[in-house]
Image 1 (cartoon, rainbow, N blue to C red):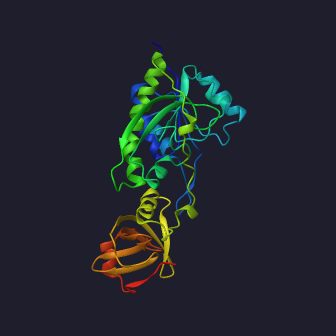
Image 2: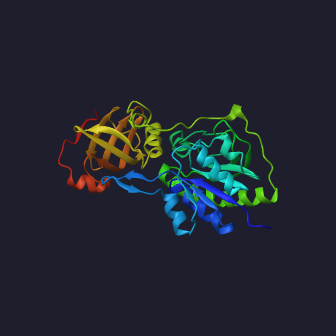
Image 3: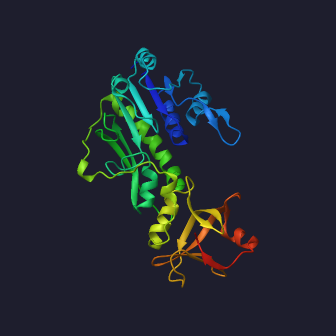
Length: 309
């Protein structure tokens, strides 16, 4: 069989393992990723994680279109005559592009579709206390995350896992699934299954205001929010006039503090919720670095009881 033409499209760290896995199985013809942009405090112009990985792998054709509907970009894809377009953590692809793939264009999504359709499936699985998730490969369609499913891999979510930890656990699963889906499409061994829209749930993009902690909620609900946006964007509250980000917490039973109250003592740093308390485990005071609570307590000289703002 002639060497297939495979175009990989992706941008962040999550997509890198999939690029490497596909390239190891079938040399990737071209990579499409976001344009270089200013990042970090120094605002240095830096490439995406996928671009750096592509360069490390020796892939010479790297496209970085500003607009995916640009006619020049479409012509570039046409000239590559793709057999497969593999998409992992990229932008919404127009049908004028994905329809160019001879064997099919597919996406890897970080959930068991049709659950958690949207930009933040990993976060919402933790926020909503899901006990199982996984990754799904599906054919691209005009409506986002609704295409026919090709295959899935499942993962049980351990209690107390954060979104960052789940992200890292799903990456190798996504990579294995991406490479396997390429094989199946090229060999014609796919059985596409329609999604049941009645079972669909949403996982919209998370904004800063979504991360503000409501201490009047149940302790488990607050803990799931904390873990669901850890490490980014990070759940936060106001503590002694400064923003306090909380990255990890555990339920602490029936401590005698009300919703929105805090108590700092031998038991640690306790935060009151509607039905009990949380013991904070990792945090970051505005202007400081992220630390474990034991380190925070060693240097703390403020009041031992009070209210979060």
